[in-house]
Image: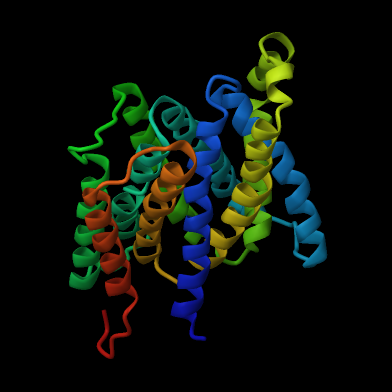
Length: 294
């Protein structure tokens, strides 16, 4: 399997896992607020990441020259992006949350071009346009339009900050994906702890939180989504340019919408299938081998 296909597999799996994340967030609506929800999933993830890192004998050492970049990953990606993502999803739907944040690739192309000096090719632009139109078909479906202005604003911030984090990670490619995910998560846990602990002590309804649905959702977010998803995504970024890797985020709305339909009863319409086809076409276009230099 060549590097391009390896990257495609890792990124596709990560995006599919994150599509399920939006359903998990919707299952805790009204029970856990966004900040303590993120904090709880990250506390679980830290333990899983440490065990995984020890099993794979990764190096935990970060060079002093890269401290600022690792800090930026934690603050921009694991803290600001995830908190705004979950805040927006709590206010909208699994479908809307997964599709708006799947607009991340548009910003990754821009940041990749500005920061990493990645080439802006015709194929990449065409793939991005097809996938973006597909997302718009799903989000602005006239037969199933659901939008909360504040929720949409949060999700847009999540998309921009996630794209910036993804580009920064390309500058740290000499480190293990597990190591970077661990430290980014640790930074987020520290930043979010004051409010999360206050909320758990003063506002939490532990009877409601004790239901299997709530803990099942939190376990999914912490162990599978944060640990598995982040590691797979960071690993995939090692094999592809940020602008190309970002296109795999468009798999999120397909998984998120189907799960929302199956479990939450959120409707599926013709516009969803049109959008899903365009998203798939955009991803396939960008990973097709080309004998000429892109």
